[in-house]
Image (cartoon, rainbow, N blue to C red):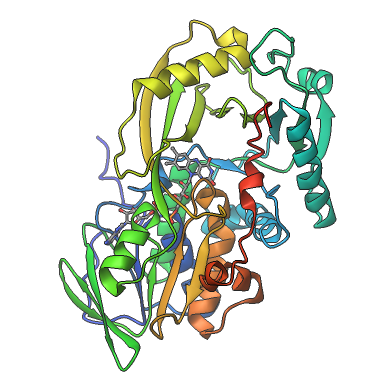
Length: 407
Ligand SMILES: Cc1cc2nc3c(=O)[nH]c(=O)nc-3n(C[C@H](O)[C@H](O)[C@H](O)COP(=O)(O)OP(=O)(O)OC[C@H]3O[C@@H](n4cnc5c(N)ncnc54)[C@H](O)[C@@H]3O)c2cc1C
């Protein structure tokens, strides 16, 4: 009755003995870099090596929030370009990435949080990103379900409203990039684990994998939560990264109720309504480093309590599914993007924490430029590993506006 469904991309290419570039990690950053290498730099002899299936890591587990109102002048332009690229990629890939720029409301619950938001807004506006401070009443007008009474643990004093942000469908991004990269000749090798990087005279020569050795002069590690362990195991390089679990969950489908993404640092909760009507909500990171992807009753209870305080109409609504993923956190909550260190031809793109989905389109573009030309693009220079040795931390922790009413 029905014909066999044609795969979106060639799922079983032959593993060749050599490639111009090998990318370790079939997540958002690996696939985006592969796509831009092939589409912008004509480098099509590229292999993406994925130990499980593409999208297995944070790529398939995130809560799909995108925005550009980061805190620092080094970060905002990167995230702005990433936002601008979603419609471009949707067209180029001929794949609906379901970008819904419904805007983000960061709720503010204290004078300190309002002042921190003023700084974010000033930086964003200076760099051409739309962001405004609104009061609690205006927030209520935009989102009638919001509880702005004084009678909650952290009363809402206002919000940082960022109209161009929103949500993008994360699995569509994975499939769209895989389809686009493979159509240009990139080989995607799933169920293939990278085990070692080989070098000679200070230059990368090969990647050893669970399916044999691949000769290559360039390798990118973009292995998400596993990057720090992979890089330490392969090169003995210790990165200032802690791996923590982030938990998330969705409710049963509801009629349209949330027109914007909302987040609250004080309550440690963020939420958006999916096109299916579910409320997708994410929690704060687990407070200790771990590599598990398990949920805990503590966070399920916390999310329910926090959401019902902010949006009382959710009382009695059920969670349908819960899941968790890894976040690779740096001390300044900004990523590490570096190249030709400690080996020529070795590149790393890691430390994305909460921010690796919203950045992946622009980062793929610039990491591809870095790998193709061998020179660091200006926009990536501030993210080099050496900033930690030089005590030039970035202060992106404030991008979460996570001030509690007590500080
Ligand atoms: C619950 C949750 C909610 C989040 N919400 C958001 C959000 O709303 N917005 C946002 O911007 N970010 C969010 N994030 C963060 C975001 O998902 C990550 O930062 C992002 O996925 C990082 O992309 P990546 O390509 O670096 O890594 P990943 O997408 O994790 O991909 C890495 C891949 O590398 C593979 N791999 C690892 N080791 C090897 C090896 N040795 N050989 C081969 N392959 C290997 C893994 O299997 C994995 O598929 C969230 C994360 C979680 C867990």
